Length: 172
Image: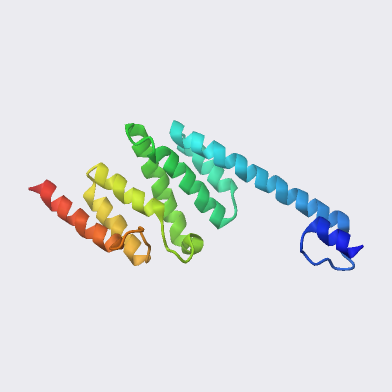
């Protein structure tokens, strides 16, 4: 009997006094939560592209798990950032990135051991693109302080030097 139940409920060990209906109800709740999250993934990208920052905020607020919030921020930011040829997309990208920075300060472990953070990297690129060098420099410094990686050999330290050089050239 327990072999059949274990196969039904996965590898989770069943307690002899555990109610099967309770387990089934929990699994149903977990599936519904997952389905809502997957639907939000689609909706948040759409809201970001349309420039609806309030909808983006609302969908992120609904999610409770930090790693899934991190993923939603990524999806929203990158959906808007991909449209960077439109000025309104740059504005919403910056708004989402700024919200993410606040979120990340309280949840630095969401990037895992790699410390790779694409939103920090693309926010720096966005600031350089819009010639906001001081903001780019501040974001690089914050990324260095948080020990984040941008996926390059020189990391954010090398990127910081390049931006400072670019700022100096644009000033002259």
